[in-house]
Image (cartoon, rainbow, N blue to C red; front, top):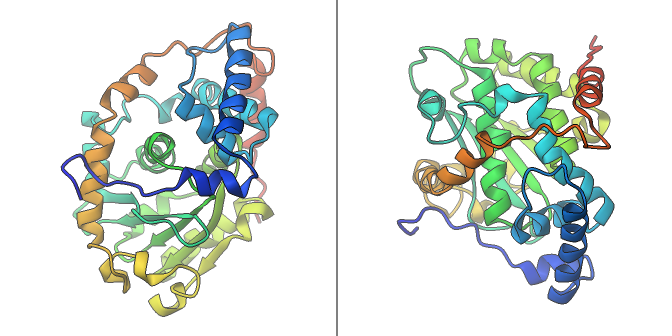
Length: 304
């Protein structure tokens, strides 16, 4: 691992080939979307080619769907500002959250070109658990940097509940998972393949049950609980896992230290996003009131 942080190994040519694309095709599609963005006057910036390429990939190279997700990448900040205010990796307000949690993409892809991400509560004393900042850490900050550093055909998340405290579990209610689902679906296009839960205690099992009840079938059916690490290996090749999970990689702590270095390299990007003027009344799909109503309807929960 270099001093510049963890390196996410990928192969764009293999990713593109999966969709029947090559470099020239991809450049053409990027140019098309960039022309569309410049033709509209409500985007707060002209996205970098790397960003557009990423959204094309997670949207299976559907240009129209990539446009929608790119639009929502910016617009979502108007309805969930708490996830994007003082939540950057270098923000003082996030220090305790990063001490409490690990959220680390692993360096190697699976043979199916999927990226593994491990979520784990760290074994530390808690002053306070801020579930909003925890959501920002996992589904905003991690995915923001992954967008710049990674290309894959989907993510598989491993959630290790080993160190989860009762207070943390109690904070993970239905509205938390509905908001996560909104971000996964409307921004990241449900690029998530599977969620694998390990070391699930009795109270952590209740968290998993709430998550399954809140998520739509397209997501809830992707959640698996494992009684052993060996069972996890049936879904995720152990050689790419950290050594404490039976793998050949460095320890999760070492890998996460490298990922934190990588996150800090994007300090300027996070600052630019936090200071960006997102609101624009000319936005045709989602004027602020319409998006707020749309988000409000999405967040309505009916759970047994």
